Amino acid sequence: MIPEKLLEIMKQDGVVAIATLGKDGPHMVNTWNNYIRISSDGRLFIPAGYMHKTEANIAYNPNVLITLGSSKVKGLHGAGAGFLIKGKATFITTGPDFDFMKTKFGWLRATLAVTIDSATQTW
Image (cartoon, rainbow, N blue to C red; front, side, top):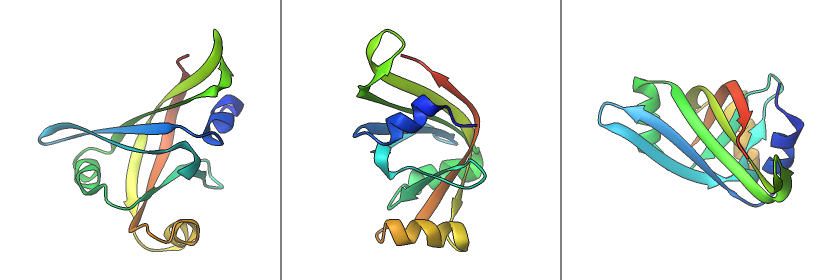
């Protein structure tokens, strides 16, 4: 289940950081909060235009760390809220999940699908 506060953050402007670990060590890419969509089964769908290194790392090790936040959402101690998401990821390039995202983001080459293991509010 995705916390309501996280859903609120995803509607705001803000940067998302996605960290992966591959053969050559850690790698990080960014996207935007409002690019994230949620599947009917609770996975996060993130459009991937490039993210080639991220895709290679996920093929090697599917574990991802994702952080996102917004200064516009009330957090634990006042203005600003953020989350750390831990999960398992895969890249989808065909099928209904890909098609769903392609209709929203015509430029994507793949859908990064993340199954959430935990979502912890950090601030």
